[in-house]
Length: 452
Image 1: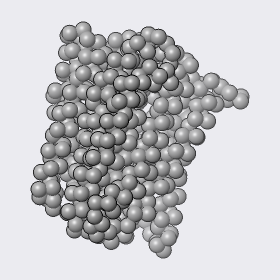
Image 2: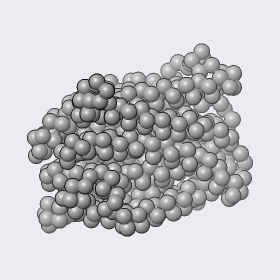
Image 3: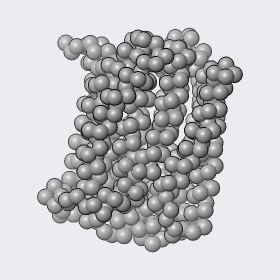
Image 4: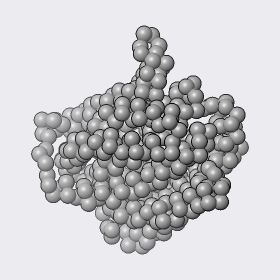
């Protein structure tokens, strides 16, 4: 468990960052591994099944991650309370997060059920559309445990107890893998459910993750002699308002980012099953490497929040820049990997020569934006630590929706560059977003006690 401490110096700050970032990054990798495993496991059903899982996730995750985004304000409130030594206040914030999860889940599920037919039908291969609807109908039932998991995760991160999160995500992959093995192809007497079996397995894994983190939070509270449920707080409208003030911009930022890639996936579906499969594989790879800077971003949010709560802006500044440097180093290495090992990476998913040929140039474009992707996500986390969740929202609006996606669509369909044109627009978007957010972060450190 990480305890707040006063200005430990660069070496001490780096060690504190790594103690948080490594387990959280492993958690993010474990989270993404679920999607990768699902895609790989349905690969034996053919390119249409790969495309259906990718399209289904693109449709599902923009609304569901809006709900998760509403909980990101817990990073700021819990971390600052912990940094100030107000431990009961951390518990009170957790309770409000659970109330938000319980209230928003049914609304998100209804929205996903409503939009599925429209997004999976217009211009999409009929077989892919049918498989996508089957996949989404089942996956949607895992929304509530996903958001409950999100609330307890933010709490545990905020108090520095990150090892249970890594354990939950890594072990949940075993639950998901076993479920995929049984339910996709119908082994050991289980029904052969195809892509629907993959979605059902993911729902089971989410219930498991939520249960593990609830247990970890219960143990954490018990150690300090404060029963988690015995002292469960009632709704606190002032705190709920504070969470919404921080969480709504963060939610819109996540939705703008995820919906941008989701929109790209929907347009890739209009190019046919082969480009869609290549797009989904490249997106899986880029999203997989993104999980490490996302973990570093969460660690930066916590450490910056701890330092701000403790009244130590110099330490907050140091934690933010160290996290940014760490992410840049990691993403530079993944860019080299994408450029030098594109075919072996794609072969993990499929040996279809048409998909491999389409995927190699897309992985090269993914390599081009790796460093910028790492910079923008870590800057977002550090800004969240100081309470600035608005600028990342505006940066994503400008980068993706005003510039990147329009340019990508013009290149794709207007100049007939196909999938490469679409991904060129996404690359441009990430360069712009990284530049805006790093500049914003630098301005915050000039006035480190300000809160946007």
